[in-house]
Structure formats: structure tokens, C-alpha cells
Image (cartoon, rainbow, N blue to C red):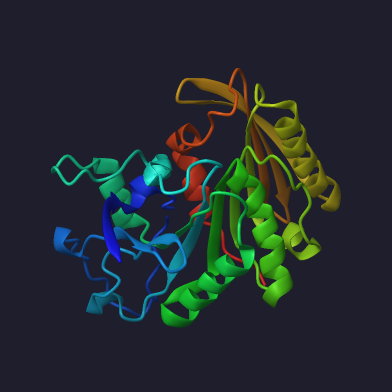
Length: 286
């Protein structure tokens, strides 16, 4: 197994929100030492990268459970984890010039991260097997499983969610889907209980724009009592509109459409801190 000197945030998602301690516990300041800082490792047997939460092995966190984030990369990006620069810009070059925001993000939003790799189509059974292995091996909060997918990975995020539910009737708490090019329908239980934020550049291929709009309309029509609101936004110099569906007083479904933006949507949306915070605030409501 080889160690990649890429920080948790640089590589992604990855992906947010510290688990709260019990109200009966005495708060103790957690110390984050560089010697305990997590870096991505590569599992050659099953072809995926993974990272543990910072301080996972420390005694102070012995009873703590953590979110798990799965990132599905776009086509042609297998092996290139710099894509995971989604997570607050960047990766550790091991030269001492670490991005401050990445470090702070790792401290405040520790989580497990799994990054499957593919050069063709996703092996969903293998991804599910990896997730189940992690759930049995590590302290994972099963109510805080998240998926982020871009392009090929965006489409894959829906297929994975559907197949995972078919496999064991379990749900992902949140999905961020960027420019998915197929798949616009999810299982009924997912439509009811999984929070989903769709992202699309309106200058992308018509198919991707249409699929994203179809995915949003499916969720809107499925939840007939949903209340919709719209908001003009500006992220990293790009303007657009976010549509939000509130269901039972919970912002469950969002769609952000960017003006004058094509398929280059893989990373800049995460400069909107609300996006990743929204994801990490989701948990499955049973």
C-alpha cells in the first residue's frame, strides 16, 4: 500500500461537520498534531483511495463515530486525485505550504473518505462491498453516509444510491451531484429521505442540462407538498440561481444552475462554503 501525500480536504470531499459530544461529557480541547494528520492511501487490491479522520486513533475519540464520504470522479480521471481539490482547494505537496483552509476543514469536519477508481464503468457491487467493510471495521455513523459525484460520477451517485438501497434498504443521508449525464430517478424511499443538491452549468451539453432538470422535477413532483423558493447566487465570479424545495420544514432538495458555465463545474461550486456545510448537516431521518 502506498501513501499519497494529499490532504483530506484537497482530495475531496472531503467532505464536514464535527460530531457532537454527549451533553453529559466534559468538553476537552482536541489537539491536532501534524504527526496524526491523515493522508490518502491507495488500496491496490480493490483500486480505491481512502483516508481516515484526523485523530481517529486518539483516546479522546475512542467512542466517537464519523461521517463517511464517497467521491465518484469524472470520466478519464482515474488515478488523478487532484480532482479532489474539490475539498477546499488543494492537496499537500509536503513542502510546508499547506492550505490553511484545508487544515481547518480537516479539524472541524473529520470524516472517512473513500475514492473508488474506474477507467470505464463503476463496479457498484465492489463499491458497496467496500462501504460495508468499512462500516464493520470502523466507527462510522451510518446515518451520515454521503456521496459526491461529478459527470460520470454524478450519474453514478444516483445509481449507487439506488443499488445500495436495493442491497440492504439503507440510505445515504446526502448527495451532491455535479453535471450528471444520465439517471434522473431514485427509489421512493430515497426521494423521501435523502437530501440532494444538483449542480449544473447551463452551457453544458443539452443532455446533461435536461437530465439535471428532469432529476429536480422528479423530486419536486414526488413531494407534492414541497415549498419552492429561488435565490440568485454568485460563486467564484459565476452567477446563477439556486432552487430549494422545503419538505416538512427541511431543505431537502436543491438545484443550482450557473449562467455562462459549461462542464467545468467539478470544483468551483465548493468555494460556496454553504454547499459542503449543507451536506455534512444531513443525516437520515428514520
